[in-house]
Image (cartoon, rainbow, N blue to C red; front, side, top):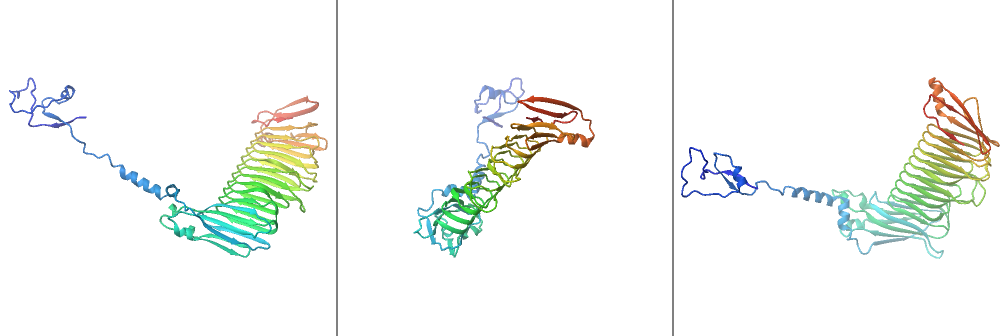
Length: 468
């Protein structure tokens, strides 16, 4: 790269110029490339000189240093820097537990405690106890000493006071790592309560008979390796998943906001009907019932706002499944309960219901979908009344011995034995409400020995198709 600079002492001879004369004896001559000489303006004196540019290219270094410092001050940067500096020996806390009717365990940490708590069984000759291992960083000695374990009758509290302390570098303080293990003897226990904001809860207590069990972890997961034997079970998380095996004697209640629910339920003995209530906002629900040990009635409520619902369930006193945008796929077994009801509701999801051959009384069923399809399979042993309603989706009915007729109100009815089924055409209702003209074309056909007929509306939007 070349730069041009005016030269007053050196003059170039230009042909035809008046100032041209004999060359001076002490004139300094500059050797240039031919292309560079042609670039010189005529009648002016220049010389070609190479020099260093005046601007600096190191202006970005302070910005890079600033970004690195900000990254270090974040929690992720601190954890990356100190990840190999965990103390070699953790602080061990242990306490013997004396309980008669109930036991409670709380974790206080305000979002700065992470880890797991395991609930396991010990032999009868050993004393119930709680062992806690606390891990922290070598540079955080004050936080390491602030962890305390308090034990009162029937209540154990693990306190992490450092988590409540605020400072300018609060984000750079890594969480306290906790590994807790609760040892319980087999036998009867009235109440068991575990509350942990961030800890995962792992349960392995198949031989402990509980009257009431409640497990809560906001950000952690809840998992049961073996069946939890309790008359009343309550599980709650915010974003953690809930999975495992649980007995169903009287009540099973599950609540989560963004976690998934995947549980195996073993129906047991109890008074009255067994109640199962599961609700989630954005997670999926998958529930499967084992074969019952005794004949009894069941009441099941499943609600997922944007998640799917699937499983194998018993139909007793009642079964309700509702999802806003998720699919509903259920295999249902009758228990012989009198006058049970079955209800499904979804806005845009697919509904697939299969009633397996089992003891069935007169069942009142209702299946509603706004824009999703409805696929139903009812066996020949089904007796009762069924209502299927879809806005723009299709309705498909499968089963043996279906006799299809049409009533005067434009509703499609199907009968099989003592059963009666109604299929509502929402488009027909829309046409009547707006006063639009309706044309009918009557079709009748025989398929597999079953006579079927239905009515199709014309001059209206898309009508749900009905398949038999």
